[in-house]
Image 1 (tube, rainbow, N blue to C red):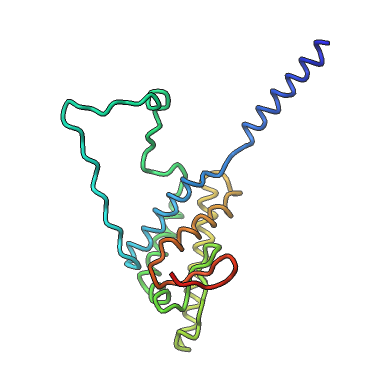
Image 2 (cartoon, rainbow, N blue to C red):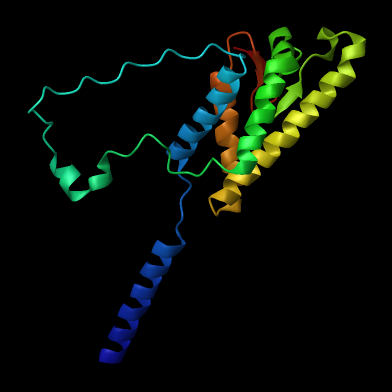
Length: 201
C-alpha cells in the first residue's frame, strides 16, 4: 500500500520540477522596451524622426525625509527594477548593425520612406511599396538599399535571440521589433499590415 503512494508522490514531484525547469517564457515586456530603445536610437540619431522631449527627473524628497519602503520592497528588493531591460540587446554585432542602420536612414532610406516608395512590413522588414514613386534610374539602387537593410534586420533579430541564449525566440523578437518600427514611424510613412494591405500613418 505504501509503495504505490510513495511512487505516485515521487512521480508528481518529478513532473512538477520538470514543468518548472522547462517553462522558459519569452520576456515580452522587456523585449518591447529593448526594441523601443534600439529603434528610437536608430530613428532619432539618424534624423529620421524628432526625438521625444525628455521627461523631467522626479523631484527629490526634502533632506531628512526619505520615502518609506513598502513591504514589497522589503520582501522583493528588485521590485523597483532598473531602467535597463532584462533582455540582452547590446553586443558588438548589434552595435555594428545599429550604426549601419543609422547611416542608411540618415542617407537615402529616410527619403524613400518620406516619398512613400518604401514602408515597414508586419514581419519586421522593409519593402518597396511603390517603385513608380522613384525615377527609373533610382529603382535598382532603392532595391539594393532595401536588401541591405533587410539583411541587417535578419541578422539583428537572430543575434538578439542568440545573445539571450534562446535562438528559438527569433520569431518573437522579429514580431516585437516589427510592432515597434510601425509604432515609432513618423506620420506619413507607410506600413504593411498582417493581411498585406499598405496603410499610411
